[in-house]
Image (cartoon, rainbow, N blue to C red):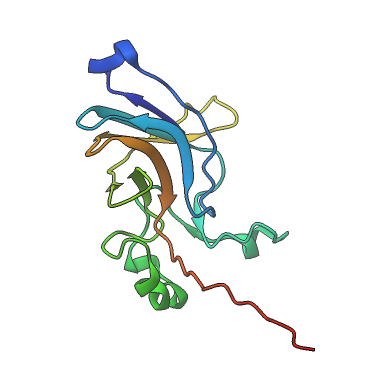
Length: 163
């Protein structure tokens, strides 16, 4: 993943590379943005982008999840488990597994971006797919990235032994 200002502000641009794992709750980028400035983010996909991919499964066919990209997927690809999980999805009005940019660690700062897809040249090995989007920061703060998936929090359960 790389994030940088648009060319208009290229005099002070910064690039940040990092790995974003879609199974993580949220990924801090370490990059801060300033309110009302424009930025470009590029996601470079190096592994299959799938919801519900079973990474521990040896058989590739059994490991396969729902193929998607940073725009996520809608009702046409939903499984019955996804339909049951709708009320617990992080952003109800956005697609499943859509890539969400969040600015700041408090309040409402989520942004769902429209990404442009670019394939690597046929002669490049390994091949990669990249997705780029631009956004204007609505507030200042660190950029976090996550996918729109079900998040269920259970209160801590403690068991006390009485003797």
